[in-house]
Length: 445
Ligand code: F0G
Image (cartoon, rainbow, N blue to C red; front, side):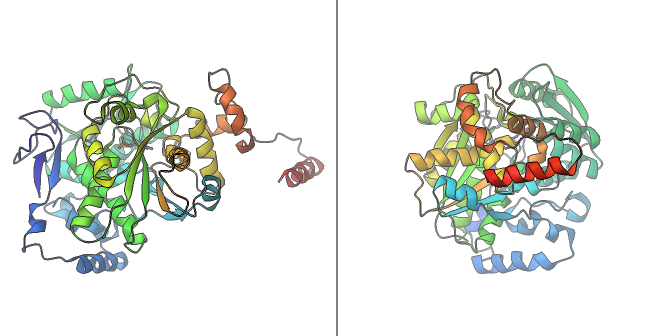
């Protein structure tokens, strides 16, 4: 395993504190030169059966849905001492029958990364990067976050007896996420800025203080997040779907899933590549505009604004990596409106699954990709749901009460979502009133 700069190709022996290339300042990634040599002793069939057998093991590393795939991850020396695991990964793949009917595709699944220990996909990358911090002997780890990275980091830091510093934009993250980082014992700083402002300050901090940076510019995070795609292929008996659809914020996750797909093909674990498509909220769409307006050659940062606070990001760090995976897999980029996000979230909920707003951009984006003809009715599609429904109950309750868009410019468009709203019914405490509500609901169903 070696580090390489994604732009100039420099291969530093170790990473600087900010995980940027010391020659040109761009991002680093891991690559595995040994895989193409005869010394790599695993063929595809051996790897598949090795990983499957670990599912019955009592070993903590084998029980983790990340470390189970450790042959494709950076090596952590003395794993018994340094690996911090909450048995992350191992997330379910669900069929979405109602959503499939509504969208007009026959074969629609959701890989629910919100079923991780801290209820978001961040845990899969965090176990690898936090273990690397532990192995490096760091006392402090830190991140800037829209809420999920911070929740995950705080948990893994606590489990590994490290201190954690969280920088979050004041008033722009959900209560569920904030409460997690408080309970897991992080030093939580709410800065009077947005996510991009938090990132700027953190980058300066890590150059001055011996704190270990746990944002997704850290290539260990990307390696761990690859395993969602590996586990997905295993769940599909190594038969890739036609499309995988992910939300795009800072663009670490799309980069990771794309990297996994390319590596799996290189190792002949899969024979063809799914198209990986990335969806952004219209109010936080710098990557969409980069690809559509500039062919992915440059990215203009913006001031981001969306109720899907997890992806309220105007200057995504990993945009060049994401351009590469779009091109390599033939995927598409889309943007969706606030109302489309809210409707899609309620539809995923009505399938008995649920997710947080940022995850719902995937279904909203799929609807657009169906309309444009990019996704065909007979094709198999997997949505990556990144966070759990309970991360942001405020959004959900406001939506169902009909308050989410009240008094905003979206109020008119939001009328179309009325049929999805299920406001609580307030009744006197008597049987007749409840039976009346039941009968009324039956008549309307
Ligand atoms: N979905 C959820 C629920 C997220 O929390 C995030 C990012 C994304 C999607 C986008 O993933 O950044 O890899 O493109 N949340 C980060 C955080 C930024 O700080 O929790 P991405």
